[in-house]
Image 1 (cartoon, rainbow, N blue to C red):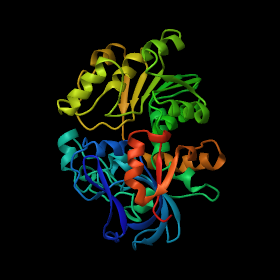
Image 2 (cartoon, one colour; image 1 turned 90 degrees about the horizontal axis):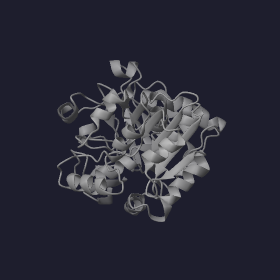
Image 3 (cartoon, helix red, strand yellow; image 1 turned 135 degrees about the vertical axis):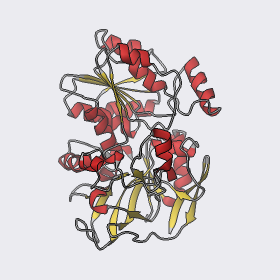
Image 4 (spheres, rainbow, N blue to C red; image 1 turned 30 degrees about the vertical axis):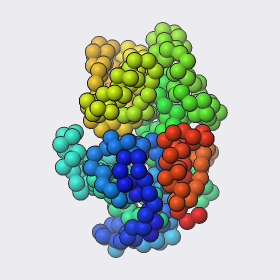
Length: 391
């Protein structure tokens, strides 16, 4: 079968790889009908995520049709149209039973790297390095889905493919940031980043009752898309002092909840852009925490900051003094998608949550390298490229 493979830093190619097979009794084989790029994939391309190997199939946000199931699968059958969570949960361990699915204790068969880097085992993730299990990704014609009864969700009749697609990762990740960030009715919420996850976090905050939501980015097309489809306020960080602007809009206090939806390759203006960029390129720090720093400084005293963007290791100049002395709550996580996907599909079916507009470019799997080039460099207003392997 065809698949989009990582060959090295900034090097992708479409290759023929062996078809997946049922390996365990709870597996299913899914024929991928749509798979989308994600900002965290760019960290793979940049060489910032460890344990990638040439030939690894990337991609983790997808929908498809079940074409085969293992003998112990009970909730799905051949022919089901499903959206699959990017995070793999076993459904039985302590973490999964407590709805903390990205902390699954059993789904990552190669826990040594995460144990060493983070002091604990985390869940397996499709197409996201051997540190996260070495699972093949979704930019392929077929994919093996472990523990399919817990990780795949039947798409309701009437929900279009492109709407369901973003319930795999972007929508539940954004919703988690707003919910676990503690958004309450009447709050003012600021979101750093107007990519797919940032827009979904902003929309989730509105649906959870926030009085005002303010999203921050620099790309005009993403700011315009957020204002039009999400309906929140926006700030271009290249044209103003973001912290001062947020205080001006909140009577001097700052937002109640700040959601960071950028991650380890955050950008900025001024000297900190140069400082963090040089240190990361020289591997003197692993991640650029520019947006995290800004969120902590901008947040009101006693507020909360939630980190949605992917970080891999250590950062420099973390404002621990501000966090402690302002009495902030800081949280972060990979998405607990299984907790949110069913109710998000219901909201999508009712029209409360619109997601298909995020798919700005649809193309074939053969165009995968071109799609990632457009996505990485924001060419032609690309917010998400969607690959249809069977087009």
